[in-house]
Length: 316
Image (tube, rainbow, N blue to C red; front, side, top):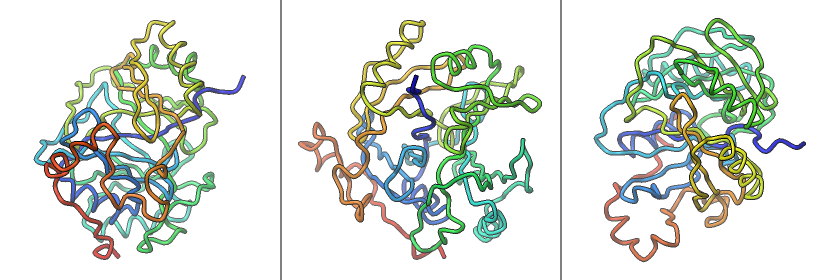
């Protein structure tokens, strides 16, 4: 049977300053700002989407930036690190680039058969860059970072949990994931085991619960092809005791949400229709786009949002 879930769709974090958020993810990391819209559940807050040229599923890191938000605390019951995939030979470039912008980074680390570095953004968001030659995606460049060094999309995600068994059952029995390997208290799962579908569970039995705020992940979304396959997943999850929301229209995809047993908010999002439905590909992310239900209040909603802009020219 064809799998209903094929990997990671997007990852969404809570952030602080909207402008600093854009500057970091476009200017320093070089991701494309593919959409500026609002948080559909809290319309007074932006929702930014960063990714590759089209914002393809598996490349999109999104943020809810709350101006003045306090920093959260990493802990159990949370997704603690977002890993991006970079070309195998690009690690020295990224070490030099991050040091140039005075961003503290780890030493070069080893895990399973991969080499990576770890650091945080200005809000404390945990980020890893994993060097791999097993990723054929093209990446994206505004011109400040060559395609030979650019981020290609997600490598994977780390869930920090007190126990893994119930979450493992969910993922392997109902979400098309399978166990790949383990190393110490880290357990790896994937759909194909390729960049863009990897999920690691780190078991921390004595860990303290995380505190969600700026610099923490709000949810991780898994991808499914379309509305039909999404409804199949929803039905399977509900039949097996998971409390799943109704389908929510997010304009660029349809979504359902539920908490996995360890406390992390999971989403299942459709690949369709994508981010080019209301802007030309060459102009993605340039305008503030609103859902139809918010358009009658555009003037009031936009007035509440801080003015932001791309500052790519400031980041060589």
